[in-house]
Length: 397
Image (cartoon, rainbow, N blue to C red):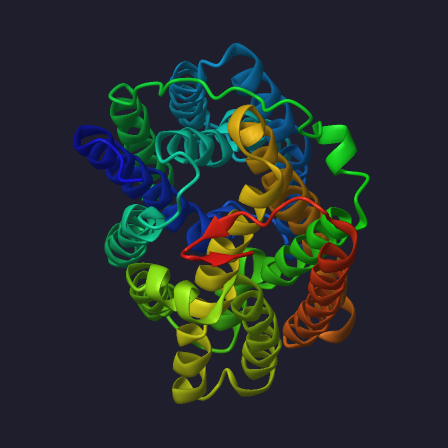
């Protein structure tokens, strides 16, 4: 279903601003913390503890959003609090201060992705045909922010990082004021509860797969910039590498609907997981080669773009209607929260024990394990479930 034109514009702007913030935070936060005097283990602990809040935060926000049926208002409150609290990053440089500020910010930013996705899914009535055309604006925001801020921070210093992040969070809040609530969905008689869904082995295997895939991606979100800086790449080039990956992601999102209609969600999901194995192995072994690094970044179209879209499609099978926000929240909590935090800690240990390149070899192993879990999920889903398949992109899941 096509969203209302004004709401489609608001969602596009929201994703542009929010993922623009992510485009500044993901590659440059670790460099900012290093500039403040934090050691690599402290940075790993800080980033991992931030991820810990993404285990519990999204679930709490999802419950609030679903039970109040005021997802737009929840989103607005979370966006405002995020911007106000982020100001604290400009004052103080001790590990304790930075930790407390970022934990407070993360409580509220953990609501932004799952609640906005749930709000959009409600607006689209679960039809993902136009999802990619809206979600790609998040990728455009990311690439614009990561590219421009990379050169800005080169010129004016990494100390500008908090102010750039604050500007983007303020834009997130401003745009959120234009989002409106769609008519609430009604739970169908006999539909399973969240607790019942989490007892299905296909659902558990799916979440195990997403957990492992995001644990693997902690290699990128926590260590990629530090790794490239260590082997001699400058801040501007690091930013361009992040931007290149997102360009590939944008291309995929634009052609998402026909790609899924032709190949199906399950085949593309498995392909993305196996390509992640290749991508992380390439970064670990060949990062000194610019050509290999470019090829690995182009695979971001698969390891993030395909994986994210396929995951959202799978969530539509089990979590829809009034369970929408909780389904998105569970995905965020288990994948980005639990997977990202434990993955960051495990990879931080690997960095200290075996060297920087080992981080990406361990990530490749995580991705391979994720592919095995996904295969089990699809096999069990075909055997165990008797409910009709939901149709997404013109094909049943």
